[in-house]
Length: 192
Image (tube, rainbow, N blue to C red):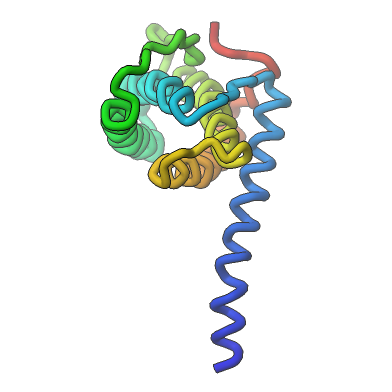
């Protein structure tokens, strides 16, 4: 019984510690690659994350039409499904909580166009850019958590989910890049 109590106590702390370490490493990676996608409020996070997620959805649709790798097709579908669902939530929250707020972000695209590339080239460009794209999203989500910006529990939960899911996806994309002959995007590259 005592062992179970200790496990009940330590397991959540261990999970939180691992999430914190993963988030810290991803934040360090974001800073190293020149990402300064910081947010200063819950509303700013929501307003900026919507076009950021939309770019990920659009890029995932693009790679889905080109790639010949099933694992990348599955990944693209997951990005499209998850981030489209999150966009809908964020739009609803803005309408509900900030009905009079300006909701247009001056978004700077991060993903390069893959039109005209071979399937193999498109895979590499997509992965290089999506890694940086995810790093930026994780940095914005970490800002919400680290600066205690969430005014609503739902936003805190979303930020935690973004850090956890996209940190895992960054690791997966890095593995694929290494396996498929790509290299991490150079520091400061934003796909312009």
